[in-house]
Length: 441
Image 1 (tube, rainbow, N blue to C red):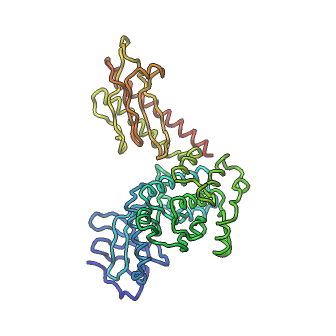
Image 2: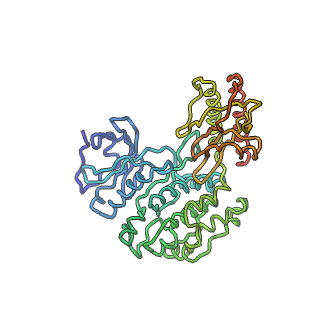
Image 3: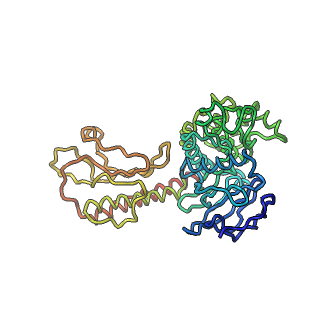
């Protein structure tokens, strides 16, 4: 049975509906947080037993088309993007008292704003890692024609994950702008000329001026502000009132980051400076450009490197066991990883191009979309490899083990080869993890 709701004119207390069932499927477990516009609850889906977060507007805003429209925009944007670093929306609707609601995945952790309020400035490696994940999430949003327009530390959530510390989830697309719809009608669907939308400290100069043609470069600016704040513990622009703040954002130069924190890597201050260019034509023109500029300073967490090394070891062991025709006893391949064929052994007299029998492990490679684990056979000399039949290049997020089709002889005992490959992968993985650990200190 659904909850019995109070009259529409009265706003229910935060805990008034705890324990009740909403929409015949969501049992309210507890109140997570209360804001000026609404309340967030932890709920349990009664049919599947999943814990979720239900966000609802206060009933007094149910008749405000602008507020309701932005509330629905948040759910649609999160659902349309479908990126691992953006919070997932699973349901939306209207409760009996008229207040709209949206259901999201339930996250455990804390936001970057809370982290900085407790810790001040963050370590460089940690700040860059958070920014890189934000870049990838916002790049996915921009590719769908969606600009966030309100990126700030409180909207960057760090999920607790033992295998991936500081796993980012971007929240609150409530004032996001859908560019394709805007272009179709020649203006913004949610704002017009002269209307500034966003959180002032993180708003770009064009947002402060109230321009209607705000695009992805506003998100580049906002992420630049967030990265500056994570590295220094201070905002690049601050003022006692909105008018003075707007004037600083539009006209004042960006503070010298190196004078505040002299130990930052060479060139990183220039990257942030370009993200904070007043003239958006001089700014990074896309999140992809900003991501490319940040990657040279990115060091993945030790836990992630170790985890990927162990998974790659599983892939190597499975390859050897596949060669011998036995079913793999490894922990299994991550989603999206696959084999392209068995590992062959060459005869001494073969007139084909000789290929090394050892697996060459390239532990972790990075491209604009993230880490790609690759394990493949390598030719001992580039000249000989060029004469061989081409191996298919691995696609992102795919583990490829392949070789040219060549004449094979009997493989050595699989147990010995499997043990050797397993030990090699473990040694390499531990070595990489130790190297990254000391690099981050």
